[in-house]
Image (cartoon, rainbow, N blue to C red; front, top):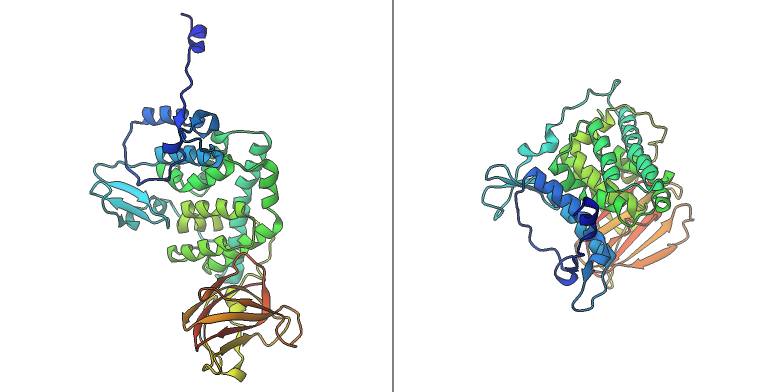
Length: 403
């Protein structure tokens, strides 16, 4: 039989959708393979994303999103190193590096073994430490991320596949000293899955507008140190701010795993690349915005603490079944964005506010508070005065960002 004839003798294998891609993720188990075995399996994974490779005994509709996610998760796990003698390693859901010496029964945080901390740091930027250097570092990071975003756009315009898109991400990480290994794919899985599955070239391009880049600049600026470096302790807050930005979800879903992969050392190197940028940091100082708020003492409100973008406020004593806490900037044109609020004590019922620029003639809007908390992180609500109302005396934590 010739090679050509042999290629014609094949059989399509259908998978039971209900117990594979259609089933919920189960507890992970580690299987160690040789490198040739991993390469062979990676080559075989691509068809697992195709809905035509599945049947359902229960006649369940084959969901393309689930088959895409199923295949992407297999790729990620195949490229995640799991074996080092008797020590297993993983990143938990918060991006913390952990190891296990009992086959995965228990896991311990192990930052000393985190591969992200082994990259060589770049020299600091020249000049005095302070706001100017922070802004230069934030602009450098934005310019750095514009490279893969543009390259991915080109790859999508040319209808290139998984290998080309993955190569773009690995290449951009090499610039800041991160050499790809299995651990990189463990963290990048979400970003790779996003850019490969379901995002058209036009949708990708539309997500990365100037507002998105400005918002990202401010997120980096708000958490970078005066010497244009990042602390490991600042990364969770940076991730939280990026997740709450009023930008397209594509931007947030891409940046999350990228920040996880780079961590503080990688972000510091990106800031110290010295890439030029022209975006302004004038509106980015969250602490300055939060510090512009004062208690409206006519009703006994007290600001207990102001820690960065977080204010803790005590209400007046309750009277007639209501208690009030009112804070303001004292200037209708000096405004900040309300991000969230949560009761520390007491019961919250309503929040009223005046939007930026509206006159001091009573509150322009009121919203009921459900379950003692509200989250406006995806909204642009810029205000100069806020009044929180409760059914009892209360203490509330408010998060305030720049307009």
